[in-house]
Length: 269
Image (cartoon, rainbow, N blue to C red; front, side, top):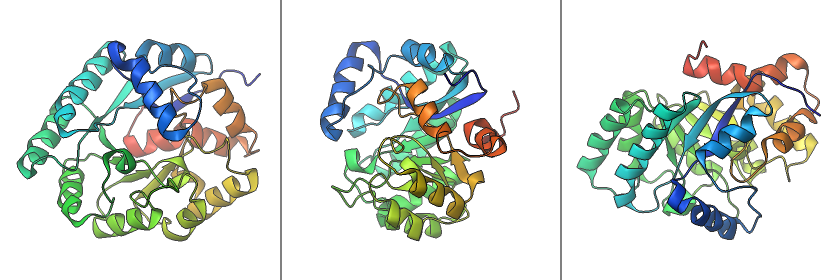
């Protein structure tokens, strides 16, 4: 048993009840992995509370431009219902330019704290020149962007692309999911040691070796990592056990499990 700790889950997905099962199945088919759960908000809280999670970064990806408005409303609504939730909104690269300005402002008004982009689902290169003004708008609004990273089947989310975008917009806080490069960790190691790039541990420790995980943390800096589960992909208890098996000192465990996220986002409770 891992025991109770103070934990922030910095990468979790939730879906409306009527599509939660279908959405989870779509993710399973995309990654050819078994899904632990459907992405119900109440299930997230139920499972996370068993290991001491007190806050969850929740998000959902718009696969079509017309989904953006309703997804952001849904995330904001669930953040009001569940005070544990720390919501990130969604955008889509094929929105009209004027819509980006309006929706980024609306994301702020809804009380959301960042933006999630999944370039493999949304089929755009992270460093697409047309997205650079969007990144600048997000940075000006104080909205970090959580990027899905590194699927080996596609080049959209390659680490070198995030490196180019992060360098082009140094004022943007970027969170590189999956240790910065799901299945492309050598590239993450090479390209992503940048002052405005942070990382989460989600959907990585089931296949990333202990030595490689520790090497990435040492190279990038332990202060740049957040614990995340990628719920509903994985079970909270299992992910915590995988993380603790890395054998970090207790001070570093606390940094990754909650302290780094609290520092970056100014959370004091």
